[in-house]
Length: 175
Image (cartoon, rainbow, N blue to C red):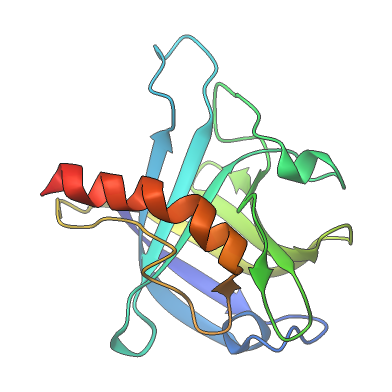
């Protein structure tokens, strides 16, 4: 895990989610991972997890390697590195309807964050910069977008039911 800084430039068109629509800077903790844990020479689902603390309440986002196309944004894709597009895979309920969030590595320690409707184009709203030599050694951090929601990005009930058993099991195994 590393520390990072998220520079939000705001959305070109309003989503109704303040965190997406407004400019700001967030200090975040980021975990980069390989989801399946295959040997490093094999492609794996790459993961990017963000934890930040808007207003004293943690918020988590989880991204996994997918595509960015209208269909491929919903398909997990093994990769050998972080250069493939990533999405949240499942949509969030927002005032403007269902939204997916995406991340794309643009340089060695830089990622572009964007949002899209289910079949719409991607709109960039932020840049994530991983800070050099800023390792985070907090074993207590448990990324969980069901428990730690960003205000305005609400999981649909069917998404919550799908994800909650896995997150609950992971919480039990850690304790």
